[in-house]
Amino acid sequence: MGKTISVRDNFARSLHENFYHGLMIGILGFRRDWEILSNRESGDGFSDILIKTKGQESRVGIVIELKYSKNEKSLDKDCQDALQQIEDRNYGQELCNQGYQKILKYGIAFYHKKCCVKVAMQSTND
Image 1: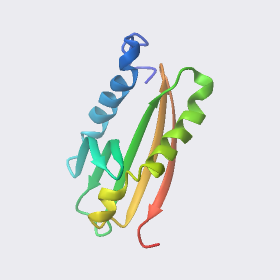
Image 2: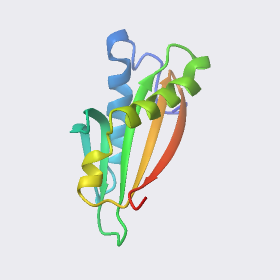
Image 3: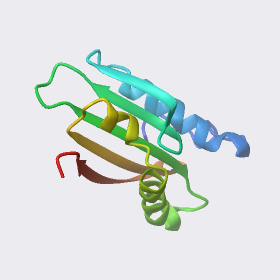
């Protein structure tokens, strides 16, 4: 991100998370074998990004929750909060219902040109 974005790109305070959301959709969109869903209802809310992979014997689903941090020091906590939100609101439910055997859950926090990523995995065979 240090080479591609400006701190002015997300200058409108109310739209911080929206900028990074669009950035992530753009980055993920290159995969033709993935179905990328934005703000999709699943479980008890709306996940930021839900990904359905295709063409794999054991399909993997992906749930991504994004947070904009108020400062660099809160990146780690905001990632953890994003993962907790995925869990609390059961955002992986749609993927489970469609037979995905493994669900990767990503909490991603952004602050200007910095980001932090945490991942958890759920096996639906449990």
